Image 1: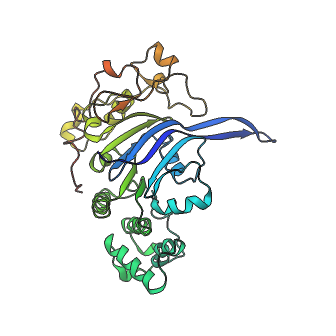
Image 2: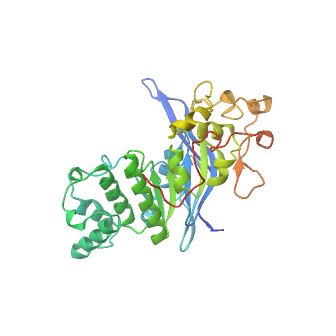
Length: 352
């Protein structure tokens, strides 16, 4: 098994709520509330859950856009592990070169006033990796590698399609030769056919450059095709993590089961078999989470212990599969293939 590239332990990111003329503290939003998981070298780890569950907050904490409230983020650099949560700004500069982010919206993430050569080349300049003609050659090589014509490097972002703009964003992220690439909803704003092309590009780049991906998404169909393992979040908590095939075939947490059941079925002939689980109530407020299990107000299996004790993330006894549920051993849950949402476990490529 690969060794961890990043080890996150009991990560907490809380935001202070203030109100009134004097801006007095009224409480805290527990955006991430004690999350622990590893990102293994060379893998693609999917991070999934509803909007507001804390997925993007974790990625911003890794980049130290947000300062963690507590916990550790151990990054295994070439010269030994470091805790990203405790480094000062000067020390962080080196590791921000090794951990890069591909944004969701390729239009708003690119400066419309700069040509592509400057958008990609800025990373090379800031990190003192190239200048002058060497920089232009490096930009041309990066554009070619992501499927863009290098002769277009002097054009501005508006001259490119949405898929091409996302390729520019990927080339910019690759410019500093990172080890970890964070894709935060990187294909959700693209058409389905362009999504497929972008996913296949990401897989090719991972193979060629030995990249590790943290892939944040709400689209489980995409996650199934690109991810080796999947971590499921709910209201700032990690509720299940497992190899992709195992999670889709045998989910252990009721929330995971509900997520899988909500995936649209593309085949009209199969839709009659669908049995979508409609959760009662609303998603818990991270500023005022319920006691015990954060999912218990919406869970049809909840008992008294669920309402009083928060379950720990515990191994199921199967390699790499852990779940935070008091009743995981006794539940028989529907998998992703029961209603025909997914045709086969995780393939090597995606077709439009």
